[in-house]
Image (cartoon, rainbow, N blue to C red; front, side, top):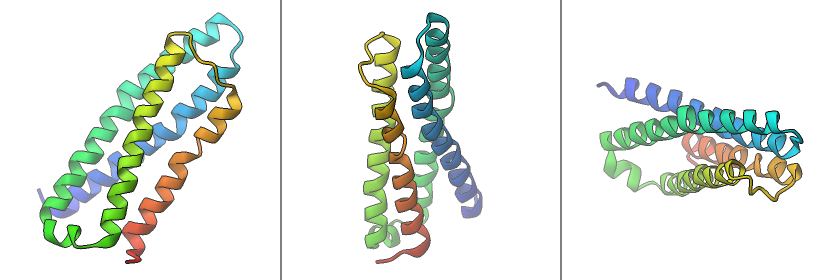
Length: 142
């Protein structure tokens, strides 16, 4: 498959992954504010479907297409400082993804102890990672 197609698929999957990572913690905000069983159960279903049906497949696709892209010019990428920093941010993003899973499981088990304000702040982390990743890839500052 040509480089351009792999790049396009990488960007598409990245957009889907970030969309899910922006929305899932927003669901946590509303879930933490829910005070009735119907809403609580509805949020559990929405969170599970978003995480399993969109976020995780999009993460896997992003990583697969990213590795594929690096395979086109491995020596070049690993010689670049910006790329190594980008990889570190991607590792943090994957950790954030799995932190979302842990929080979702707490909600699923009825064990959430955090208030909606925590999730409002938690929701900002992927924004910072996105800014860093995009700046590194586009600007290549070092």
